[in-house]
Figure (tube, rainbow, N blue to C red):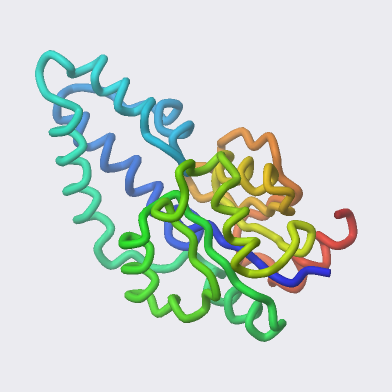
Length: 219
């Protein structure tokens, strides 16, 4: 019996990932450096080490990674102003409440980042538990965030369904023994997912109730 749902944040609730990619691409383009999607995708949902190495390789003699990152953050801040919730997310949260399910959030981003957006978008009060990078030593794909969510929600792994948009997030959920539904965004749609239970293209295409019915038929 499913007793709880756990959501990722970046790329799933709001599509910050597409904006991050566009921001890196724009800033690096000013230095005549291309930014391939294959450099960005492995970092979705986890550390950006590969991106930093790429910047160092391409621009190390001309400008520091720190300065490039600063410019990218400023560009991202401008682009993300006014961003809305992804289609179907609010409806899923409302349905979860009606079904009397506990609702958690497990994200590799910081508490400050997540809380700010959730309050701005009037989503904060839907969540019973919010676990962020501030709560763990290891972020996704390590399962620590999910283990903390399970403990705080007081549920077992087989009583939870997670919603993720990236392979790193899906791997974290599955490593914690949690059933995982992937909902890719435009950036992660072409990503190779190696561990998940169900894929849907959008939360707007089918209800949470329908997804839970599909899950219980094969899990």
